Length: 199
Image 1 (cartoon, helix red, strand yellow):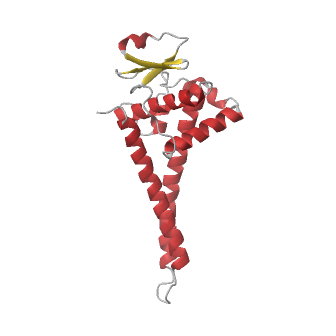
Image 2: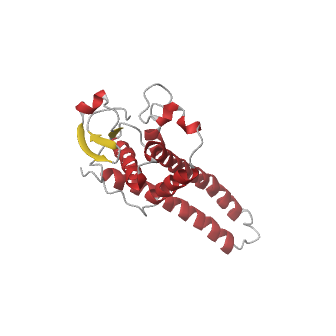
Image 3: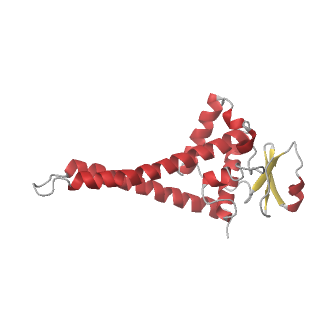
């Protein structure tokens, strides 16, 4: 299996979801603009449009949630690392999602363990999320996350398939059990092994 499989799989999922949203919205708009009811079918178009709206809202809500989760993990784990550091963290999330051992959505991966001790990403348990965000850094993370999710920015597997990382300032006990792949900024990246925490 190639290391870019995580990225391409997640891209396919997001592109498919966005295509569904666009197709549903286009169909609803097109139906409302071109529908000319006969006297015996007056309620047909409004019912069809109303039925499509909840499905579209649910998919859109999920996409917005996935965007927020990706923005948060990039911001809290790498806001001082520039776009290359934030993209590296995004890669870890997508690689984890591809393994199937950490969750099958961005939010599931990012917030795994948040309800108990042992968060996979420390900010999810530390209370950092309630602190005021730096507006400029948050906007940059949100923008980069959107560009990644829409495919405008392609992740290039700079982490070598990493599913784990830690700051250079710490030496976690799990690091010796994994294969070190690279260092990007102030983070060291690893692949292999089961669940291990980042620091």
